[in-house]
Length: 154
Image 1 (cartoon, rainbow, N blue to C red):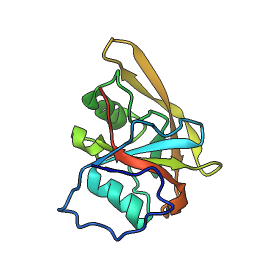
Image 2: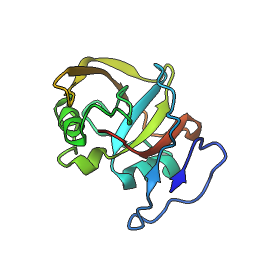
Image 3: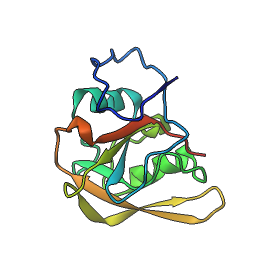
Image 4: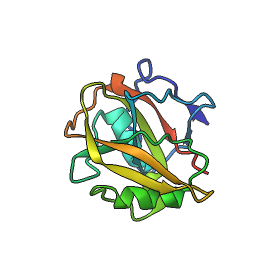
Protein backbone atom coordinates (compact mmCIF):
# COMPACT_ATOMS: atom_id res chain seq x y z
CA UNK A 1 0.00 0.00 0.00
CA UNK A 2 1.15 3.48 -0.73
CA UNK A 3 1.51 5.91 2.15
CA UNK A 4 1.79 9.61 1.46
CA UNK A 5 2.90 11.87 4.29
CA UNK A 6 3.63 15.03 2.35
CA UNK A 7 2.83 15.99 -1.19
CA UNK A 8 5.50 18.65 -1.54
CA UNK A 9 8.06 16.19 -2.90
CA UNK A 10 5.81 13.92 -4.97
CA UNK A 11 4.61 14.99 -8.40
CA UNK A 12 3.23 12.43 -10.81
CA UNK A 13 0.51 12.65 -13.40
CA UNK A 14 -3.14 11.95 -12.62
CA UNK A 15 -3.98 8.27 -12.80
CA UNK A 16 -6.64 7.00 -15.10
CA UNK A 17 -10.00 6.87 -13.34
CA UNK A 18 -10.35 3.11 -13.85
CA UNK A 19 -7.06 2.25 -12.14
CA UNK A 20 -8.26 2.99 -8.57
CA UNK A 21 -5.07 2.16 -6.59
CA UNK A 22 -5.35 1.36 -2.90
CA UNK A 23 -4.53 4.39 -0.79
CA UNK A 24 -4.20 4.46 2.96
CA UNK A 25 -2.96 6.77 5.68
CA UNK A 26 -0.09 6.04 8.00
CA UNK A 27 -0.58 5.14 11.65
CA UNK A 28 0.62 8.64 12.45
CA UNK A 29 -2.42 10.71 11.61
CA UNK A 30 -2.31 14.28 10.35
CA UNK A 31 -2.45 16.80 13.19
CA UNK A 32 -5.95 18.01 13.92
CA UNK A 33 -5.69 21.75 14.36
CA UNK A 34 -8.09 24.48 13.34
CA UNK A 35 -5.96 24.85 10.21
CA UNK A 36 -6.39 21.20 9.16
CA UNK A 37 -9.78 20.42 7.66
CA UNK A 38 -11.04 17.36 5.84
CA UNK A 39 -12.82 16.94 2.53
CA UNK A 40 -14.67 13.60 2.10
CA UNK A 41 -14.99 12.26 -1.44
CA UNK A 42 -14.68 9.08 -3.50
CA UNK A 43 -11.26 7.84 -4.63
CA UNK A 44 -11.22 9.28 -8.19
CA UNK A 45 -12.28 12.70 -6.89
CA UNK A 46 -9.67 12.59 -4.13
CA UNK A 47 -6.98 11.73 -6.69
CA UNK A 48 -8.06 14.60 -8.95
CA UNK A 49 -7.99 16.92 -5.95
CA UNK A 50 -4.47 15.76 -5.06
CA UNK A 51 -2.92 15.52 -8.51
CA UNK A 52 -5.09 17.98 -10.42
CA UNK A 53 -4.97 20.80 -7.90
CA UNK A 54 -8.69 21.56 -7.65
CA UNK A 55 -11.43 21.39 -5.05
CA UNK A 56 -14.74 19.81 -6.02
CA UNK A 57 -17.84 21.69 -4.98
CA UNK A 58 -19.70 19.20 -2.79
CA UNK A 59 -22.36 21.56 -1.43
CA UNK A 60 -24.37 24.65 -2.19
CA UNK A 61 -21.66 26.59 -0.30
CA UNK A 62 -18.84 25.43 -2.61
CA UNK A 63 -16.30 23.04 -1.12
CA UNK A 64 -17.60 22.01 2.28
CA UNK A 65 -15.01 20.84 4.79
CA UNK A 66 -15.18 19.57 8.36
CA UNK A 67 -12.93 18.93 11.34
CA UNK A 68 -14.20 15.31 11.58
CA UNK A 69 -10.95 13.28 11.37
CA UNK A 70 -10.88 10.36 8.89
CA UNK A 71 -9.73 7.95 11.61
CA UNK A 72 -12.67 8.51 14.01
CA UNK A 73 -13.17 4.93 15.23
CA UNK A 74 -16.47 5.37 17.11
CA UNK A 75 -18.55 6.29 14.06
CA UNK A 76 -19.51 4.14 11.06
CA UNK A 77 -19.11 4.91 7.35
CA UNK A 78 -22.90 4.86 6.96
CA UNK A 79 -23.35 7.36 9.79
CA UNK A 80 -20.72 9.72 8.38
CA UNK A 81 -22.38 9.48 4.99
CA UNK A 82 -25.81 10.20 6.49
CA UNK A 83 -24.45 13.18 8.40
CA UNK A 84 -22.70 14.60 5.34
CA UNK A 85 -25.86 14.20 3.27
CA UNK A 86 -27.99 16.02 5.84
CA UNK A 87 -25.51 18.74 6.78
CA UNK A 88 -25.97 22.10 5.14
CA UNK A 89 -26.60 21.23 1.52
CA UNK A 90 -23.99 18.48 0.98
CA UNK A 91 -24.56 16.78 -2.35
CA UNK A 92 -23.46 13.45 -3.78
CA UNK A 93 -23.43 11.35 -0.60
CA UNK A 94 -26.10 8.81 -1.56
CA UNK A 95 -23.67 5.92 -1.06
CA UNK A 96 -21.00 5.47 1.67
CA UNK A 97 -18.33 5.00 -1.01
CA UNK A 98 -18.75 8.74 -1.67
CA UNK A 99 -17.12 9.49 1.70
CA UNK A 100 -14.59 6.64 1.82
CA UNK A 101 -11.56 8.82 0.97
CA UNK A 102 -10.31 12.12 2.29
CA UNK A 103 -7.99 15.00 1.62
CA UNK A 104 -6.60 16.80 4.69
CA UNK A 105 -6.19 20.45 3.79
CA UNK A 106 -4.52 23.42 5.43
CA UNK A 107 -6.52 26.60 4.80
CA UNK A 108 -5.57 29.22 7.38
CA UNK A 109 -7.66 32.30 6.65
CA UNK A 110 -9.26 30.90 3.48
CA UNK A 111 -12.44 29.30 4.83
CA UNK A 112 -15.60 30.52 6.48
CA UNK A 113 -16.95 28.66 9.51
CA UNK A 114 -20.64 27.90 9.03
CA UNK A 115 -23.34 28.14 11.66
CA UNK A 116 -24.47 24.61 10.78
CA UNK A 117 -22.72 21.64 12.35
CA UNK A 118 -22.17 18.02 11.40
CA UNK A 119 -24.09 15.91 13.93
CA UNK A 120 -23.36 12.20 14.09
CA UNK A 121 -24.38 9.37 16.39
CA UNK A 122 -21.46 7.29 17.64
CA UNK A 123 -21.48 3.51 17.82
CA UNK A 124 -22.11 3.97 21.58
CA UNK A 125 -25.19 6.14 20.93
CA UNK A 126 -23.49 9.44 21.85
CA UNK A 127 -24.05 12.58 19.80
CA UNK A 128 -20.85 13.78 18.14
CA UNK A 129 -20.67 17.35 16.84
CA UNK A 130 -18.14 18.64 14.31
CA UNK A 131 -17.74 22.05 12.73
CA UNK A 132 -18.41 22.78 9.07
CA UNK A 133 -16.45 25.20 6.90
CA UNK A 134 -16.87 26.40 3.33
CA UNK A 135 -14.64 27.84 0.66
CA UNK A 136 -15.47 29.03 -2.83
CA UNK A 137 -11.89 28.53 -3.96
CA UNK A 138 -11.80 26.08 -6.83
CA UNK A 139 -8.06 25.95 -7.43
CA UNK A 140 -6.04 24.17 -4.80
CA UNK A 141 -2.42 24.98 -4.07
CA UNK A 142 -0.72 21.60 -3.75
CA UNK A 143 1.15 22.70 -0.64
CA UNK A 144 -2.26 23.00 1.08
CA UNK A 145 -2.81 19.21 0.90
CA UNK A 146 -1.43 17.88 4.19
CA UNK A 147 -2.28 14.23 3.47
CA UNK A 148 -4.86 12.10 1.71
CA UNK A 149 -6.02 8.51 1.66
CA UNK A 150 -8.69 6.04 2.67
CA UNK A 151 -10.85 6.78 5.71
CA UNK A 152 -10.65 4.49 8.72
CA UNK A 153 -14.04 4.98 10.37
CA UNK A 154 -15.20 2.28 12.79
